[in-house]
Amino acid sequence: MGGVLKKDIVSRIYLLYGFILIIAIAIIFRIFQIQFTQGEQWIAKSQIQSFKYSKVKAIRGNLYSDNHSLLATSVPIYDIYWDSKIVDSKLFYEKLDTLAVAYHTIFPSESENSFKNRIEKAFNQKRRYYRIRRRISYSELKQLKQLPIFNRGKYKGGLITEKFDYRKRPYKMLAKRTIGNFNSTKQKYVVGLEGAYDDTLSGDDGVRIMQKTSGGWKPLYLFDETIKEPIDGMDVITTIDVNLQDVAENSLYRELMKNKADWGCAVLMEVKTGRIKAIANLKADTANHTYYEGFNYAIGYATEPGSTFKLASMMVTLEDKLVKPDDIIRTGDGAYKYYDKTIHDSHHGGFGDITASQVLEKSSNIGIFKIVLNAYESKPHKFIDGIYKLGLNKLLGLEIKGEA
Image 1 (spheres, rainbow, N blue to C red):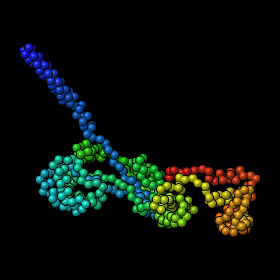
Image 2 (image 1 turned 90 degrees about the vertical axis):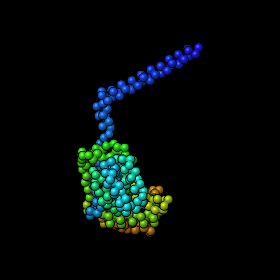
Image 3 (image 1 turned 30 degrees about the vertical axis):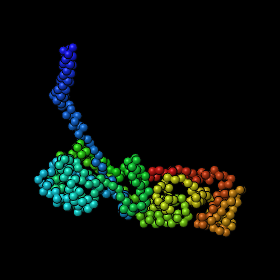
Image 4 (image 1 turned 135 degrees about the vertical axis):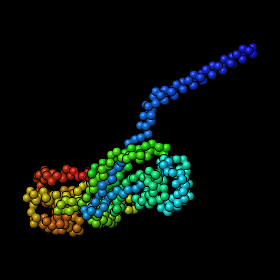
């Protein structure tokens, strides 16, 4: 009985050994196949996966006011990385203390010991793309490049700079909505002057090669990594007058506060040329009891024309020779009933008898109503045709998107 059991155990052991041997032979065969038969294929694939093309952003053009004051400009900022593998060990430890002291002088928010410890750790780990600092200014970068080790550049000191541009408005909130801003969801400028002239301002991005390392993707600097140089965007000079814009915004703000309005808009046009010198848009922030620029009502909000329609009405009537500037219009005491509707003038007591010219000067509701009524009561379609001839029923085709 014992001999049979022993024989059965030995048979199972031989079977297990045989199974393991088959697996080992299969692994050896696969290694041989990969190394000698498919080696070049896998090496090529590995190299492809280790490199990629990356976009090099062109510098966005500037936006200027009518007198060449900057409305929006691109300011460079930098992320700093370090390739520790190309730095000589003797040099590193000779200069480490001096580097830490000098770094703390530029960036006092980080202690000498903190910087020393983390950069030494990165050096010992042979980090290829170790982040030193994010979002530093050009002046800080110039100082950083003077520090020990880093002053040897990227080929001997391992210093790698990544440049970014952020948009800055020197006048801060002035004409903010008219200038426009970046839409992070759509990853582009879609409103205001920035959106209207995006193609002109943005330029043409370049292309460079990036290499994958243990620390992430980094520019390949063994040779000129930029294979297509970016073409910077062009500048745009607008018709905005910053002084008039400031006056428009402050005046609008005061009136909105006084009348507790929900929103307001002011547009200032140079009549001789049609150039827009200022656009102010303010919306109520009820939580903070103030106003802010959140929507361009001048472009994107359709509403009744109000008193501006008096001018159009007078133009049509004069064009049809149905009224003369010195004709007397009886506006009465400030209230005029037409069927079941009563029209009022804002002036208490009314304007009495005034000329057609004075109707416009005083912005008399009753006066303009009587002029149109006398001229077109029996032929209202003729008045409407005259309004349409002025093009008031059509979009203006403005360059700024979102016209209502």
